[in-house]
Image (cartoon, rainbow, N blue to C red; front, side, top):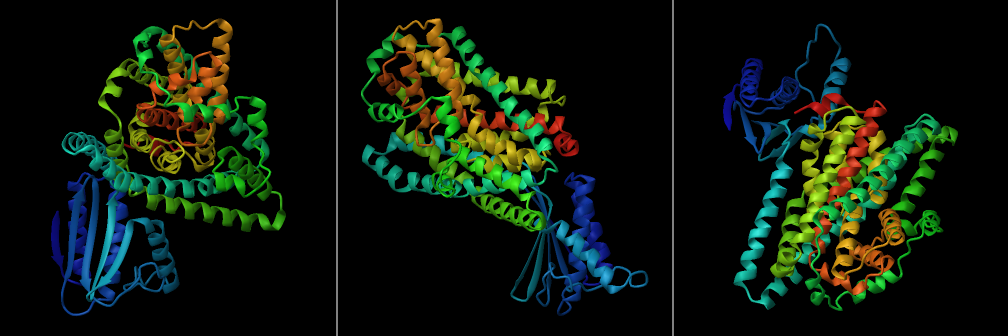
Length: 552
């Protein structure tokens, strides 16, 4: 932290700006970021001096924390608001421009960096806080720290406290916090998907342009799904996990899951017919993503076909999109707390013996997921013709967030934000591809269903014929698109799969204890596939900002 006090006059401004520039250079901030910070600092200091009171000078503090660098300016004076056009004190150059032009230029500067400046008036002092560089890994560090702390604390509490206390702690503190957070995300995910897709489609000049991009997105999703199914089968054949001795561990605990599986359809016809809702409100109440996407597509296409009202409606949908994205940003700020409660709860409720007995299945599954990440990297390199290293580095925080939430739907808005701001993918692509991918592109789930199905068939000593294997692949493909949106859907899908290959449904009880952990890895892989496809499509369509993508 660096501090300096300067006089409240033009000479003090020059001295203060030199101090800020030198300090920011010491913090190794990029030249463009320094220039932006200097512009904001000059505007703020000019206005603060114009509203100062007394002879006290101006205090300047430059601080660095977890990668973020901020500048704080403090001076006693009358309250002001930098967002108001008329609240400027000293002209830029009164000899060469009139007052209105001066106000317009200053207002333009401040609006361009509105998210980096905060004003506060307290106890007669004006304080302006400027963000010179945003924390690139702050959210990742906090989330990862919460994850590690939760695991350690979970094992400590499990060893130190009696079962009744652990049950009460989990039921009255950890689970409620996690549930409230997930409910908050579920609350906004429907509107976010709807408004983002409508806003995205309304930007296209023609249906042919939209159809071309949509065909690329959907075609790549089908391609990666086929690769995931093949990879899951291939990795299982290499490791062959599954000990028949685990058959003794099969219990009747899967009765509820089996009942849910009985009502799950794996018909392509039913899945296609179910896309069109009979009620425009019901899909939002039930968060039926396929139906919400269908409604959004219709609305987005229709917006450009209603003449004089098109512009107003387009602005309305864009405003609503910005509103719900901002709400999501506010919710995402508490992710570290939600991760802490979720992981602690998982450790308290999952027995170590369950984890150990299924290490073979877990190792095979994680190896296949690692292979899928390699596949994404190769596709980015071969089809997108860009290096996959920036993608892997910059999308890592989003992968960790999705992992901790255990749901690609819940992390959808965070992933969209990462694609736009960190990867440089145009909103015209990711506002369409990410919501669609979160619904129909389930590569991690495909790998899981293939390996889990073959694993349990091996435990029961069932050799799959060619027809049974084809039926299994078909079921995995359909379930990856139309997986039921209910708690424990991974287990339900696995149960449906077991029926297709002749394995007793009760076998799913073997993986019930560890399925929440598998679900976290599935979700992380699913969201990574969505982002990889979005990147490839954006690059081929000329909608990738290379400067942002390759920026370190």
